Image (cartoon, rainbow, N blue to C red; front, top):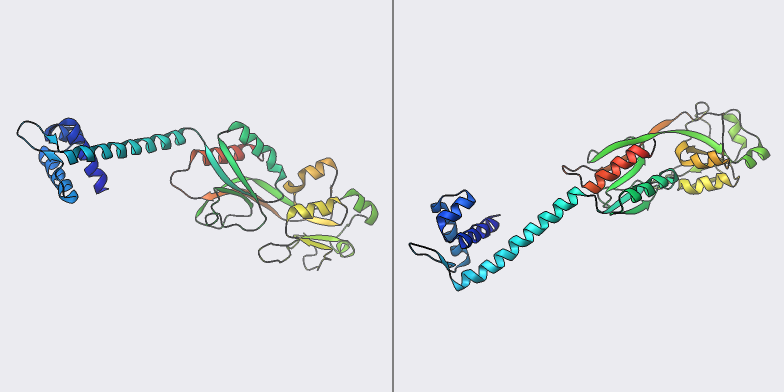
Length: 291
């Protein structure tokens, strides 16, 4: 900071040709400018200015130093202009973390890209619990309530857990009517990538039942595909199978009922000044994803 102050002071002295005029530009007294110039010369161990009663003149070393100082100040001005331009219009790249079963968001990601062509998206699909800050994510989409105080959050929408199976599976095996009926069915389970534990099925009844495990997957995407192929019944969030239910590839079971709901959030590192590209992404997804 002291070096930059010295550079700005010297450049004003060189441009104005007098301590008084330089002081007016800097909001300092002529005495303060003179002392600052003396400190700069003492630090550099070279005389930069010839002083006379009428006008100041640069030494050969002063002219050489001035050329360098002007280039430095030009670079600072250019850096500030680039930053201000970036604040005015969203641009650059965003690293976005998404769960595997986020096909519902794909049309809205495409819509954002059309609306903001100067912003590039690096999309990282994973079901594991990522370290948002440590892994350099700008923003992630995750279910469940935020628990990291270093992150800011904005709710995208809500979800309901449900049981679903392919029509072909139900035609062959019948539809369960109670939680206990699940004991004779093929059950497809989600396995947490971080702990390898099976995610419990949040059944309204039969919470103590140990359900069969015909298959377990550590990605929701694989679980959905197995269910579509008639391999059994899966417990899934409704948003992850919205298209399959709409197209008839999967059928929602009325009984037994899954009794858990939750929220989907955008999470990003807390910062006093949010980059325009991140603000644009958050606002666009919050307004469109679950509208």
